[in-house]
Image: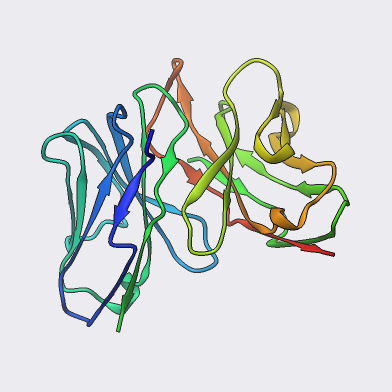
Length: 113
Length: 117
């Protein structure tokens, strides 16, 4: 069990640029989640997948955000035309179907300048 | 809608003292309950969970939590604090319906635990 991995760990970008993050879940987990955490706050849910299907999206996920999980394994989260308000830690988690606990990766810290 | 309240954004204890971090939830049906720990610039690590059965659950690093339905609480305790316990702790809930879990976790605001020598 290698755990959930995320790349890159840190990303600094200029406002208006596009960024993409990758998450590799625990290998036997078919559910994958994205959360966003800003300083001093708990993580907030963005979206989740069961296998390839995106089952729920938060209203926090504006049109500039898109997530994919094309083969039911790794997932990508893309943010287009980044804004300073997008600066946050983006966390990925995975779980098995019907198991309520989720296992988190180390996160990608995005800084938009 | 589910909500989680953690009383006290900062808790400070001396090494060897009791740790008590408070968590209350709001839900019509008792949810699945979790405590996670986060060290600086890292992801969240699962400390313990309550799903069913015994209401006192034990986790890693000597932590335990008790589910009290009547109080809608799930407070985290540790009898004797260690310097390495200094971190931020999050209480989280996952709603249950018909015995299956839903996707998203709802987190509290977090409690930063400081341990003094």
